[in-house]
Image 1 (cartoon, protein in one colour):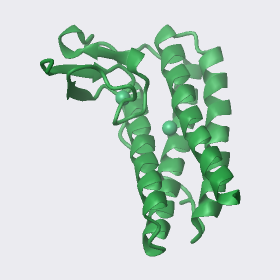
Image 2: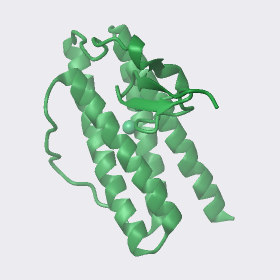
Image 3: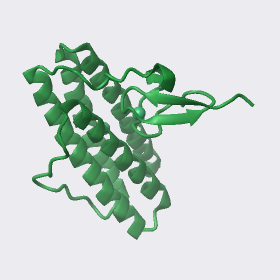
Image 4: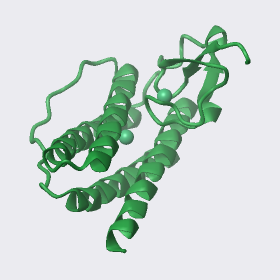
Length: 183
Ligand SMILES: [Fe+2]
Ligand SMILES: [Fe+2]
């Protein structure tokens, strides 16, 4: 068996121990290409001089992530009440990933977590929540694609590009579940 090593994800910064980098970051969902060995980690990854536009776009992304994380928390609790183990697992994983995105954004902004002005609600029904999750991921993908294309900081272009890939994985997951529910 190959020896384990320490890796770090360049999108969320979290460390991972394994014989190789994972196909998806277990914390933020970023794809394998964003992992580096911990010994090669650049401590300035989150030290980016932000333009006003970058700051505004990161703040908008933060609101989206916090809102989506709170929605998935609600959806997870609803699935738990309904004894729907699959939806419980899915919504819990999504809640954790979206929280991780919010904390990565906070590292760029160098601020502490703001309170949400209005807490999102969810349905008691996991199919309805899956539909709502699809809409939320779609909204996030559109916003992040715009932020990626407009960013003048190469690091933020990369960061928003990685978020587009991750949220697209979530969108595909919801779409696949909705297809199965219709059968
Ligand atoms: Fe990550
Ligand atoms: Fe996210």
